[in-house]
Length: 83
Image (cartoon, rainbow, N blue to C red; front, side, top):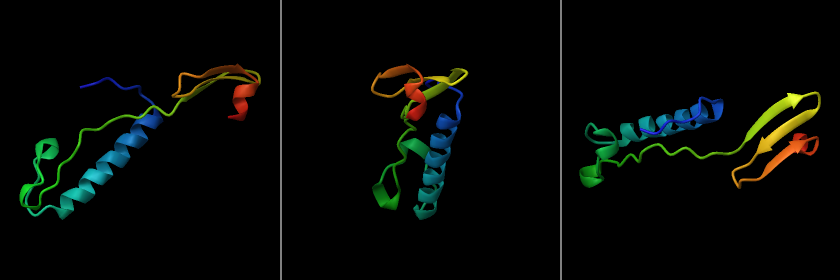
């Protein structure tokens, strides 16, 4: 199991993943066995959760911020507050 940051971004993605899994469970003809369930006999395969980092913002005080985006782009100062 991989450690993920304790942020709302992670929680929102996990919630969306779980909702999708629960919706697919209703479509199964038999009780699914979680991530190891196969598509045989009408069952669905549940892929493991994968976190997609969408970036981070941090307030530095005053009108300055620091921004980190997924493409390893970093901005610090007044310009990053416009992103």
